[in-house]
Length: 518
Image 1 (cartoon, rainbow, N blue to C red):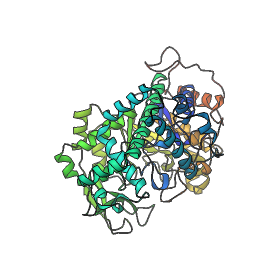
Image 2: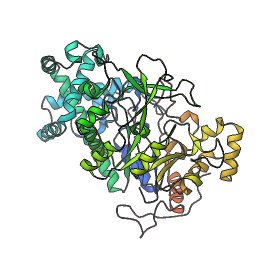
Image 3: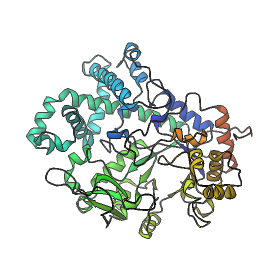
């Protein structure tokens, strides 16, 4: 992270493709090639886990599993797990957004056909051996996850606290009985996770070969209705029925009079410490099997977190509770070595959070859309950024830069124009230039900003229960002209190297000094 570089933020669901949602197939490989052509070092993605209610990658059924919706179906035809006729039955999906209901129905059906053919022995024996080896290697989390998802389906997707008592409370005899009764579904869930990991590993290898690193995203908290909480109830503040006693959120601030009540169960950090933070070691180790570095969401929660009684409807009546501090990071470093982590240190940040981040020498974050609402002391302005940070034009929770400028008040827009020396006619690329010319070691650009899109391309509206996470990159949008503009920005700002001077792992860069996009 100490070399100047830049990258693009684009979750795989947003990639183009034929089956209603982005996947880990040829469009993802083409995106890696585009990043190289554009002179970019990093591809940042959002959490990769299986999504539940609201389709949010931040509310996953597991902190360890992958999202089956990302599996590329064409590769399954190549493995003889599917036939071309299976895919010919695909509905006519739109290309501009994800219709999750239709995608889940179609992909769920064809993935069951694929796992059924594998279970029936209709494919190469080497594939079955590969699956068995994978299941044995990942058994620590995979067994619980596969049974959890099988039970979710058996009980009509109800929260695990509403299941049959023996299954909900993990009574040994009940679990053994359910594993036998749901054997086929448990096997299906294992197959799907193997397919996801197989494809993701191949894609990551393609990225490494091209000199592109993948930045992942790890939420600090997990969802209550998840295999993690169900399988490790002792690590959370839960009552005798498994329901949370206290939940996570953030207190009221200038953005919300009632704060944000996220509803995630809170960790029993005392018990985690007694066990040597083994769950966190497993979680981070698994994540680093999939990505090269991690954006650790809500980093401030390790210094102190907002605890809300579970029966409170808002986040108003809560209290600050001291977090584990650097203890957990010391254990992680001892067990896993150097920690490639970016600390998400946005929002209401106190001095103890800065002290923890700096003691660990972790890069923090700056967001340009937050920079122009006050005076020259604003920490998000480029001249106030430290080198050891990652600067963004905006994040997945923000509007696009074009949408931000359109909706900003005139005072904010005036500050933006004065600071940037622009007339406001191209806020997206003005933001990109500010990020790229900053002293921040890494600049990350949401793909929507590179494409100069407005708020129709916004990915998430925090606080909105549905209709998020649907945006998709238009087909044929990743043009040679766009790549050239990003490449010239990267070269001019020292974030890429010309041919003959590139570091090991980076491909040579040919420069043509074409006109950048307006």
